Length: 378
Image (cartoon, rainbow, N blue to C red; front, side, top):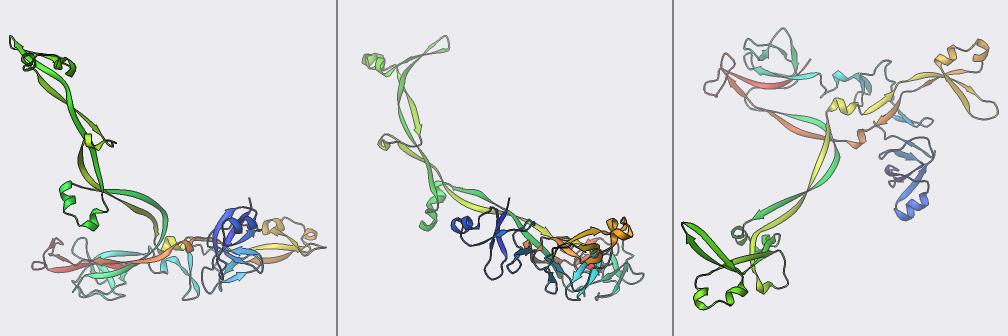
């Protein structure tokens, strides 16, 4: 089914995608600026439309990358190293670097480091402490400190992650208060509550007479009509039995007594579900197709060409290879989901721990050493 895409003014960024073959219908029924996708690509929100070429591309991943107007894929200024699946583009350095050299990746750890050998500076060698479960400054190197800590106060670092809203659901939250609590609310707060009540009435259902024979209770029950036919002496032995009738609504409120149960307030809360990724997983949202070689041969009579793979070219005879020219197809982006995520940060506080010589945590007055959880790299 063909796709129609709604475009953002000026940027030509895709705002909506629907399966439809009529931009006229979209413009009239949905409003906005719609373009028919005539390519073989399955366009998604966030893609960019190029009107001069009537084609689409994924968003530009980095400012330094340029668009290949034949394949409409983004090309880095420096080709990715062969076999560099574990590399990521560093925009600041303008080069490909191993992922384990990019900050905030999984090539780090947090160690409990003591002040046995003094304060910690960036680049200090961290070794195993004589206190079980702890580390300290010294040799031989286990890891390298990437933070400064003088053990005088808690260490606060910033954690960077990437977040995307995956769903928003509505949740009804009821708040009930008693009649007494409701009466203590202000007039402005009372208007937010709904009275929950029912209506009750009572009437004589029947009359009952109790006689005891040999210690056994024997009841005689008569209707109201039968009771009314008794003489006064007969009536004196009967007791009326009340029956109650409860309804939620009534057209005759004068026949009922309103009973207020409580007052209720309804609020609707949005429950938002997020997908949060660290730097490594965020980098993996860009799926790349490595550069490769293909052989092209221009077709006679038109401007097109046919192409074959290296394996197909190798299987041809020398005569069959005539006319084919080797072309290097640059690395391209297959998919890029990074535009759907936004960068977020949050503080991470590492508290100071006061420990004795065996590593048992104690208070400041009895502590022999101070320890803090510090980020280190391999």
